[in-house]
Length: 303
Ligand SMILES: Nc1ncnc2c1ncn2[C@@H]1O[C@H](COP(=O)(O)OP(=O)(O)OP(=O)(O)O)[C@@H](O)[C@H]1O
Image 1 (cartoon, rainbow, N blue to C red):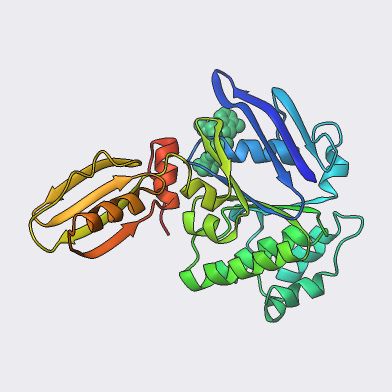
Image 2 (image 1 turned 45 degrees about the vertical axis):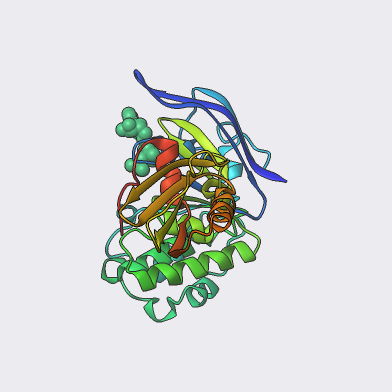
C-alpha cells in the first residue's frame, strides 16, 4: 500500500523552477531514499510532502491526506527530523522530548525513547553539550516521539564518525522493523545502499530514476570492467562479442568494458583460442558510477 503518492509535483521560486513534474510513491514499511546533488530540489520536495511548503502544481497524498488542506491532521501522524540549529543550546534532553511529546495527542513515553536511543544517562544534559552522535540520536528520538506512521529523516549521519554512522544505521533498521515507514534524504551512497529498499534519484528538479539500489547498479546501461593479464603476447578480437563496448590493451594488461553477460562471452572465446590469462577480475559498476551516469555529476560531500 502506498503511504505517500506524489504526482506531477511542481514548485517555482520566482523564475526558478525547482521541481518539475516530480512523481514517486512510497510503500508502507519501506525505507525510501531521496538522493541527488546539492540544490536539486530534494528538501523542497520533502517539505511539500510534509506540508511545510505549498506546491504550485501536482497532487500529494500522505496517508490519504492532502498536506495543504489537512496539514494539522497530517502532522499528528508524521515525524520530522530537526536540523542542528533548531534546538536551543541550553535545553535539556528530557525537556526537548517532553516539549515535543506535548505537540501530539498520543505521544510515546519519552522515557522509553531515552532508553532505546541510548540517551538515558544524558537525560539532564544540555543539548549544546552533547556529542554529534548523541545529538543525532536525540533528533531521531524527537522525530519518533509522536508515534508517527511515517518518519522523515534528512542528512542522518552528516558529521558522524564511521562507528557512530554504523550504529545509527542499525537503529534506523530497528525503526523500520517496528513498522514505521522512513523517507531518508541522503548524500551518501554507502548509507543508501545499506538502508534503502528503494531510491529516487533527483537531478535538476526531476526524478531521473527510481529503483532498488541493486537495480540502479545493474541498470540496463550499466557498464562493467573486466581486467586480466595475458600470459603470452597473443590476444584475439573481442570487440565484436555481444555486450562488449570496448577493449583496451597496455602491454599484457587488458581491460574489456561491457554490459550484461559480456564476461561469459569473453572468457568463452579466450578458452576456445587457448589464451591463458591471469589476475582476471571484474569490477562491477558501483552505485556511485550509476549516479554519475544518471546525473552526469560525481557525488557531493564525502564523510
Ligand atoms: N525559499 C526559497 N526561495 C528561493 N529559492 C529557494 C528557496 N528554497 C530553496 N531554494 C532554491 O531551490 C533549489 C533547490 O533547493 P533544495 O533545498 O530543495 O535542494 P536540495 O536538493 O535539498 O539541496 P541540498 O542537497 O543542498 O540540501 C536551490 O537552487 C535553492 O537555492
